[in-house]
Amino acid sequence: MVFMCYRYSVPGPDLLKKTFQAKMNVEWERKFHIGGFDFPKAPVIINDNPNEILLFNWGLIPHWVKDIQSANSIRQRTANARAETIYDKPSFRNAAKNKHCLVLADGFFEWRWIGGQSFPYYIHLTNHKTFAIAGLWESWKNPDNNDYIYTYTIITCDANPLMAKIHNKKQRMPVILKENDWKKWLEKDIDKKDSLNILKPYDETDMKAYTISKLITAKDKNPNVPEVLEPFNYTRLKSLEQRGLF
Image 1: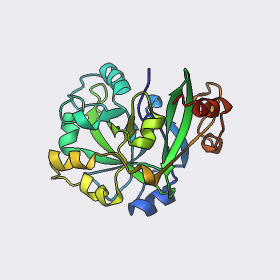
Image 2: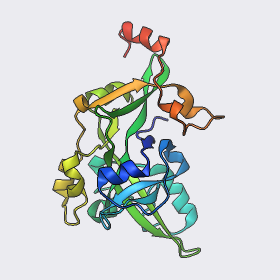
Image 3: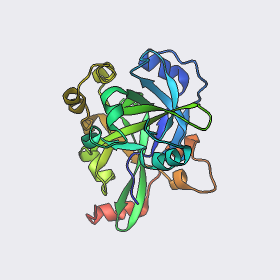
Image 4: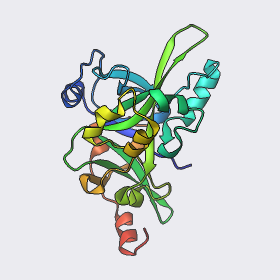
């Protein structure tokens, strides 16, 4: 199975607070890699509280889910939401109307498939700045203990030319918001038309990508280490590219 945006990296608290001009009253350390299937807590800024960075769990649980078993099942399929259908899909349409968030990151990971093999890439902005991915959030009340669980999903869109080459099976990418759209995405009265106009592919000329090692999927190693971001050259990939197999 080929997924969309299921892995990304996040800066430490000082850089997050400086970049987004927001307070952060929760403990956080720089993450070189987080993966969606772990349903981790990660920094977001929500439209209900745009001046504070909070930690929500990745993998959206819709408000209408009835029990924890159903919640754990559905969140395996809601780490990503397609921009084209967020107002139509039952899992996302409530959040699309009134629960927008910024998902804070400084890079993300994707796989490129060539000649029957896959090669991981790390993608970041050319200026190495921290950025915001468009997201949706929800609060869900667990009927077993009345506790609230706060979750989010990352919105994806069609890939730009750079990402179409890398993520060449799905040709999707996370919606990286332009800095002047951060506040607009969080406006409480933003309508469907304006929302969808924002959810567009980021300019490829402002992005960079390079191959990394397969440490991110090593079963016996922790990928949340600086080494996961180090460039790694694949002789096989270079050979395939020279032969035009891409």
